[in-house]
Amino acid sequence: MNSFTYHVPTKIHFGKNATDHLGDELKNYGKRVLLCYGGGSIKKSGLYDKVIAQIEKAGLEVFELSGIEPNPRVDSVREGAKLCKEHNIDVLLAVGGGSTLDCTKWIAAAAKVDHDAWDFFSEWAEVKDALPVLTILTLSATGSEMNCGGVISNLETKDKIGRLAKPLLPKVSFLDPTLTYSVSAYQTACGSADILSHILEVYFAPQEDLYMLDSFMEGLLKTVIKYTPIALNKPDDYEARANLMWASSWAINTFVTGGKQHEWSCHPMEHELSAIYDITHGLGLAILTPRFLRYCLNEKNVDKYVQFGVNVFDIDKSLPKMEIANKAIDELSDFLFNTLGLDDTFTKVGITTEHFKLMAEKACEGDTLHGFVDLTAEDIEKIFEMCI
Ligand code: NZQ
Ligand code: ZN
Image 1 (cartoon, helix red, strand yellow):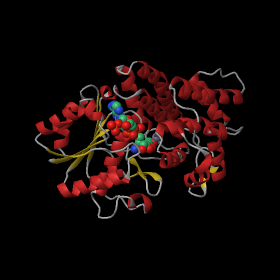
Image 2 (cartoon, rainbow, N blue to C red):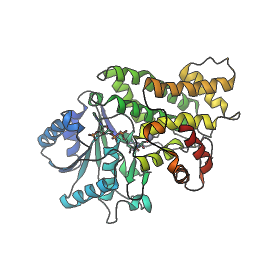
Image 3 (spheres, rainbow, N blue to C red):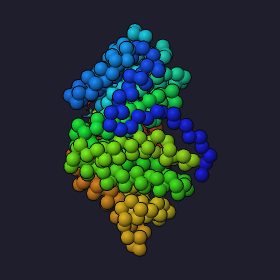
Image 4 (tube, rainbow, N blue to C red):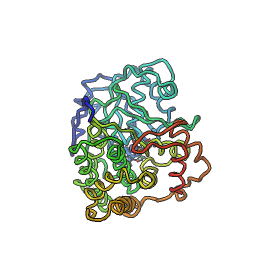
């Protein structure tokens, strides 16, 4: 186990009416607020009116950026940065799912520089500073509410690139599970597939594991497996939505990675799918993950699969190891495709073999995708073929 520093100072208000603290928290960061949101779900749910009322009650001035897309575009980042500069914005408030949160984080960084926002991704321009970001989460999935990452797409270059930068960490996040009652069954399922993937990307890593963190991750996995079907059957089940929401934050706030060498595999592959086909992130991950696990399984790493199968899916530990491993992958597939009802092949979501070579090369940056098992472009193409 490696030494590490854990420092994630996002303040969380969790629970029903968590947003009652909004005005007081915003006031700590200035007077001029840029409210950022997506395609209108917050207007339909009535959240928009509540947010505006809170901001007005706190005596703050509000400006707006609406229409942030799923798989948010760099054009929205540019537009938001322009607004920040024009109106001398002090603080950004993101209200929505991971796309809105990610876009807002990069607006906060782009507002502080003179160069184009895409330079953060194409040139890896330094992120020295950012405006403060507060978030109100409305979809449990990405963990963006409690991490310093953000993923942005560029339609012109067909790139979707994620990057971490400490100044982007939200100062305060408001997590009210009731705000996720209106999330559709499809987005709920995709969100849960994303949470599972965030955990599995770390759980299946090439290095010796810390028992405490593995047990914690198994608990998170079981939480998602237990509560997603409940939320699907009864969208306003508070316990289910609360468990999913808090699990989404803790799956990817760097706690589970403590001291562990880990490199992600399914996410880089999925980002190439979304970059070209604009599919929902969690759906791409759901299709890829069981195939990735099946492709990587071998005699040397089988014990990790056994641990996963026995501890998460209660598979009989007296069975032969390879049988347990394959059963574990079957159980995961069954959960994703039958229980959650997600499409199980690329063909069903309109992805053909046409760009496999290009996507595979980009996913491994023309060399090797390091991870649980190191993958070449050829390996990645084979995994894509298993998904057809
Ligand atoms: O745009 P609106 O109208 O708000 O509708 C959204 C959108 O259509 C809707 N929605 C959100 N909350 C809702 C709701 N509909 C009804 N009721 C609500 N309460 O759901 C749709 C999808 O929203 P989106 O924000 O795109 O989903 P998600 O949270 O899954 O975010 C996906 C993005 O996050 C990135 C993904 O790559 C993708 O671009 N990721 C960010 C990460 C991070 N920051 O750490 C890590 C992840 O691995 C991921 O890559
Ligand atoms: Zn993800």
